[in-house]
Length: 555
Image (tube, rainbow, N blue to C red; front, side):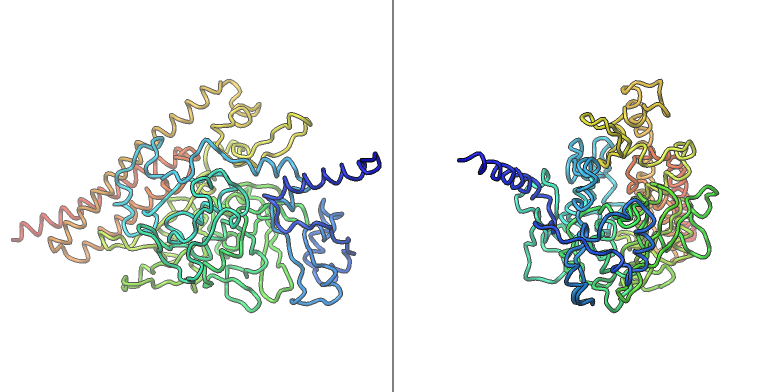
């Protein structure tokens, strides 16, 4: 082979090899980049995009970097020629290499599908199924893994899709990362039914619960998921069809505006909470709150909104998902009919953020919003189901008041060993496994050793575990007492009061089963809440014991 041929062939082979290495993560990557377009032409129809694109660091980034099919659209503008938008991680990873590579890491210290209620580091919870009887989370309630796995993990969990989505390679899938439908397969493609296909599973997923798992469909979803002309997906859509239209968990553009290169939030229910006229959220009550600017987006014929932040604020950005929110049908506590859901996915209450701490939840859902999640299978009373309320729990904690933020502990600044470049790691994991970069930095606990930091963390969690078990014991005792009183024929108004005591005690406990820090985000709040849960359970037990004693005496 001639030297001239080698000079052509070797670079070509290098390019081909690089393409093959990149292929497992590729999503709509174009073999031949499209020709750059005149952005002024796009600005003519997309005024919100113009405002954003001209204000930030991406002003020189051409539209073809994230959109394909532009030439065809420019020649014949309209919905039928609408360009494709690259929603993949790689779209940003082409320029932000270190952030992309850190995001793609997996936290191998935490097993996949680790049942929350049975973890040895929490101590086994023998009461879980009894306390949550009647709810789909009793089928499987697994701990989180890395963000790169979040959509895949959601699709395979036994409570969500009834077991219809399964890994192509069996349990080896736990080592795979990337696009969901490269890893999983629909075992029942002929069925459009959303139901349980395998024993001891549930079909509890719906279009709203997907809003935290992926924003691949951001351009096809109207504000709050309202059914709208031109919006392909809504709260009432068939969730099986919707989920097959998405691929990636936690898109970069969830927190980073791709046009302005500025921090933002896109989660519609959070934007709705922060713009509520009554101003009743934790954010509204914070005198140092981060300012937001809500922007109406798009020319697609239906409302879409984003909110730019004055500066990075991980309480809001992480709080798009690590937060208590309602994402399912349920019951109006004032509606006496408990035989079926009185609130369906057509109701806006199924896409709702309180953005309050645990002590405001009872009043918010019972008195203000009128929503409870499920009917307890043993007592018949209505109960609430918590989501992962890390943001609100951390909000007024000691660490928060000291100026720490979510990224300080979970996605800290790190230095690339090869280049010496400092960047924000996007490998989101517990600080317990990156102590030097988090707890032991120059602005925090400088006098501690790694062993001391780990010991402190474990001590806080050990104390919290004890309070959890005590609250669960008394909740279980109250459930038994309600059943005993019902059999004894105690008056219905007394039973209803006891069920309300159960709800209050349940909220003060169950918040902490969903919150993922084992109480560490706010130990003081955790203790106060869990001890109040015990108090409320004991009040309910006494109420019933007194009523049963009176009934016995009357005989």
